[in-house]
Image (cartoon, rainbow, N blue to C red; front, top):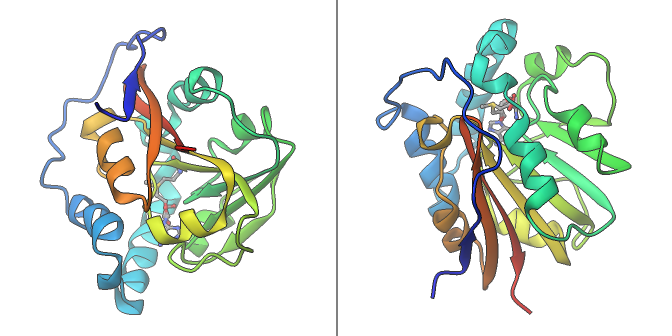
Length: 214
Ligand SMILES: C[S@@+](CC[C@H](N)C(=O)[O-])C[C@H]1O[C@@H](n2cnc3c(N)ncnc32)[C@H](O)[C@@H]1O
């Protein structure tokens, strides 16, 4: 039986969805390798990715799919019980979704590898840390929810910092057309141990909320 339960969409797709084929986008391989071959991640690769996103920072918020926040809101509302505590926003970029995370969590830390992305964050609503999510500067078992909106997943680190009942909120704002895309099943498969998930679609996006099986 699949550990992922799909629930019906409640937020319809808005008009104007970009027609793109990102199946061969270079970030696809990076995303897959981060999740399934994290040992292949090097300082050189991290620097390349940081530079690439630094270059995208000035125009990041012109990317329409990045501004579609309803998949995240839907995930938080319908993805099952979310424990109280500290939320970690991984790959927070220019902070587009941070206010929506703060609507649910009192305490949020946002991290990103790209300095230029972080410099664009205004207003600064949560502590920002510039770091590589391959090495999170956080204690073991300290995070109630790891939130990744179009962000790379390094399973060992997310597993290390999440509390026992902590959840992973994985969102792709352009669904399977998102450059940094993994299916709900792939996220579950990449994580150490056994997880169950609730997943759905919202607007142009897809989401899954995963929690450890007891
Ligand atoms: C596709 S953008 C998404 C940004 C934001 N979540 C949004 O939806 O607007 C991916 C973000 O992840 C950051 N990133 C990429 N690799 C990272 C890493 N290893 N550690 C931390 N952040 C990373 C990039 O700098 C970029 O800001």
